[in-house]
Image: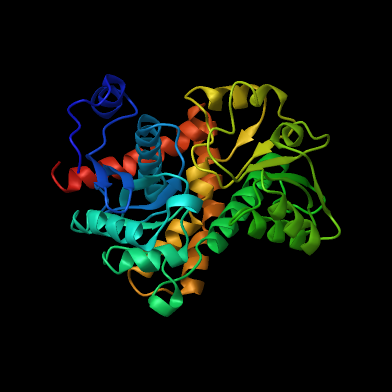
Amino acid sequence: MTDVSGAPDHVLQTLFRSDQGGHEQVVLCQDRASGLKAVIALHSTALGPALGGTRFYPYASEEEAVADALNLARGMSYKNAMAGLDHGGGKAVIIGDPEVIKTEQLLLAYGRFVASLGGRYVTACDVGTYVADMDVVARECRWTTGRSPENGGAGDSSVLTAFGVYQGMRASAQHLWGDPSLRGRKVGVAGVGKVGRHLVQHLRDEGAEVVITDVREDAVRRILDGHPEGVTAVADTEALIRAEGLDIYAPCALGGALSDDSVPVLSARIVCGAANNQLAHPGVEKDLADRGILYAPDYVVNAGGVIQVADELHGFDFERCKTKAAKIFETTLAIFARAKTDGIPPAAAADRIAEQRMHEAAQGRGW
């Protein structure tokens, strides 16, 4: 762990003094031998040990990595609360290009840092990390989920993440159009990697028309080859959000997809996707509502994966997890109902419900 006495003031401002702060613990990790630089952020353990994935990404700066870890950890607290899990929120980020610096030695070093927290944080996969990576991390850390079935795990969590997003879409359609069916609807999916490709399959199985985009040409080609009918591609996200006749927009890549630039030109009536932290800043949810766009809170609908990795800690059962993930449909409808009752955007309604659960748990512990 490195000295943070020289940390930029805006980092400390976020940690201790801003509305976005309130984190219980932040650990800066460095292993010079392997080249590891990582941040582990624990937002809350009111509901239980913090649970959240490990993101491996070439951040432009250490400050950007810290900011992302803080935002993601906070989001996990809310996600786990809304998913009904007995877990708080945490997240880790490893700084660097995984295609360049990821090694077994680096992952083992990271596992030792997670293990040093004694179970306060349980890690799993995220952007840039995979099941095989968690198998390596688990060699040094028992608090690791998202492992392969061969190593006692549940395997790829993107399957149930996509299933949960699909249920959130159905709930959004029910609320807005009075019918959960997506048949004949035009859905734009930005990012067709681990989660997006499974989501496309659900949509096509129901008869939706799908428009896709991804920064990786091979990912787009794989989807088009697998779905010769009913799926088309556009050049980029800018083209996708402006697509004519778009009913639903599904951001399934990195965060910040809903911004001051994208919301005014978004053609869809519903936003429901797998990406974390889709709102670029507070206030975007009101901009969406003012335009009559229904937003399904990201941390609610993308909770299928965390439901799966949490279940792995107790002996994984896929059907049990799928049944829990299917409840995202009812949870999403409940959020829309609360939003209407309270006269607030759905994102704010979800926050209120999650905060109430965390507050009640903290009070029960005498905090």
